[in-house]
Length: 112
Length: 114
Image (cartoon, rainbow over all chains, first blue to last red; front, side, top):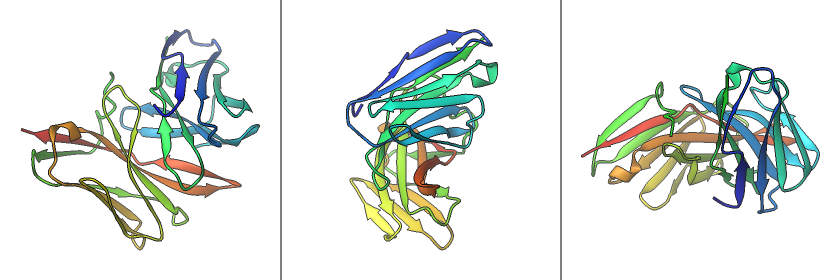
């Protein structure tokens, strides 16, 4: 899987609790992305990073924050999880803007 | 794994026939495009890409066509096989501030019939 590891792979959490998902890469790629995938919506971009400490919002960023303190790790945080954030979350990495992105295996998050 | 294709456009083809999957993109500034295949329970996998200075690119059994005039992409799969059954997504790389977003279409569920 192109040196990408997402953790945890599965998580069940209660509404209102904070949750952090981790994406770790061993490829030294510059770009990292977080997507969520829901039935009927395909992959929707939450946040992305174009370098250490450089991040920007995607189309569905409300309720999520990210951090990238080193090249290899991109963290996605749900400050106070809601049921609408139940989804499958995918991390992707990309060497530069004119290359393909490689995806992790996904994290299935259930908020009850 | 969970199905993510419950409400997606669907395409059914006979094994051995050619498949054509279409995609409309939204941003005229997008200059790089990718097709991905996603099997149930897995992350998307790269199939083929094309840059905006091209209108056609071929790979092994796959061809991507790009029509910038109408902002349309297509993926052609020759001699479709059962293993091609999956959800297919197009993605566009477009400028966003000082960086680049990679934005996906909604996907098409391809089913190969025996």
